[in-house]
Image (cartoon, rainbow, N blue to C red; front, top):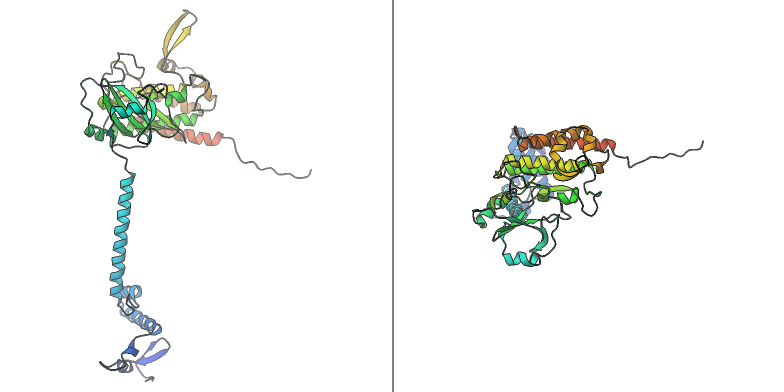
Length: 416
C-alpha cells in the first residue's frame, strides 16, 4: 500500500497517492470499520491538510472555520459545526446568566422609594420629640428602620396639597452625590417632618463654621475645604434647577450637611418647597437668606440665598449680626453683604482662622461671584455660578500642591 508516484500528496511524514487513499477507504459492512477511526495524530494531519487545501483555494472564511472548529466533537467523533453549536449555546447561556446578574445588581443598588412614616414611629425615635436637636437645633439625629437619619421639622405650607406616596415618589426619584437622600415624610398638623439619610460623621455647615463652646474652632480649617463645600452646593443646586426641574427654597447653612472623609457637602430639605412654607414666611426680612420681596420659592431666590451662604462660608461670620458702635454707643445690625460690598482688603475680610493660607486672587473672585448672586439685577443662573466656583476650586487645588510642606526629605551624611 505504501508507494510513491506522480500526484502524491504529503500528509505528515507519509506520501500517499490519490488512488491509494481511495483504496484505503473501508467497504461498507467489512470488518475494517473499527480500524478506520482516525488516531489523534492522523486527525491532526488531516486537519493540517484540509487547512492547506482551503488556503490554496483562497477561501479565508473556510480556513478560519476549520482552524476554529477542527477536531472531534463532544462525542469524540463529532464535526466542527456540532462543536460550534455547542459553543454558541454555552455562550448564550453564559450571556443570559451574566445579564440576569447585572440586572439583579442594578436593582439592588437602587434606593428604596420614600415612605410615609406614621407619627408614632417618629415620636418613638425622638423620645416624643424631647431629644436634644443636633446641628444647632436644625434637626433630630435618630435611627429610623436601621438608618442614621436627620429628622427635620418645617412649617406646612397653607393650602398645600396632601402629602401622599405619589408626591413623595416624584420628589424622591432624584439621587445625586450632592443631595441627601429623602427617606420619607410625615405630615402632622401644622408641621411637616422630613427624614433624610444622614452620612456618617455628618454635621451642618453652621455647626462646622461656628461652635458656641469654642468660637476659635472650625472643622473647615483649610481654604480648599471651604471651596470644596461651595463647589458641592453649587453642583447640587444646579442639579435641582436644571435636571430635577424644581427649586430648593430653603438654602441655608442649616440645610447643608458636611461629612467625612473629604468634608464633602450635601443639600438636605430637597422637596421641602413642595410641602413647606417659604423660609421667610414669618415676615419680610426675617431671613437673611431671602431677598426683599422674594415671595414664593424660585430659582432666583435660590441663587440669592447661595450668594449669602458663600459670603458666610468665606468670612466665617453670621449673615446678620449686631455689632457695638463705640461712636454712637449703640448696637447696630450689620450684614455680611454690607461688609463684603464695602471693599477694602480681602485678606482682612476673609475668616482669620484661615490665617494667610489662601490665594488672595481666588478669594477675590469668589467674593465677586457671591455679590453678583445677591445683586438685585442681572442675577446669574446656577450653571454660570457652578462653572465659576468649579474653576476656582481647581485653581485652589493647584495652589495647595505648590505651597504644601514636603513630606519626604533626603539626608546624606559624609565625612568632612
